[in-house]
Picture 1 (cartoon, rainbow, N blue to C red):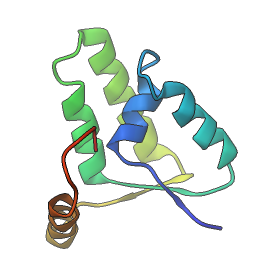
Picture 2 (cartoon, rainbow, N blue to C red):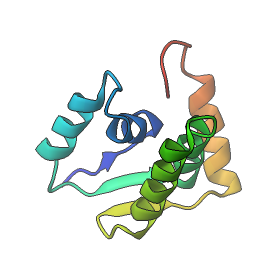
Picture 3 (cartoon, rainbow, N blue to C red):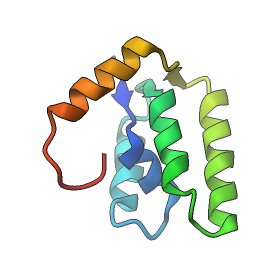
Length: 101
């Protein structure tokens, strides 16, 4: 079974009911319910940063969501390391601007 990589865009769309991608994120998650989810510490840090200037209620929700993701046995969170950071930089360098990550 192929794992589903959940990037920052996915977690934001899942958390924000007003996000234009919210329904699609729910659908993908439902369609792939049996697939393991993989994300990274870097993605969760970026997710929390996205909501850093949001109203307190949304910031608390984002923090709670991040804690739940870390505790979810169906989600593998790859810890940040120098190698993962450099790999992320390499991916970042290979993408053109336009849209969220």
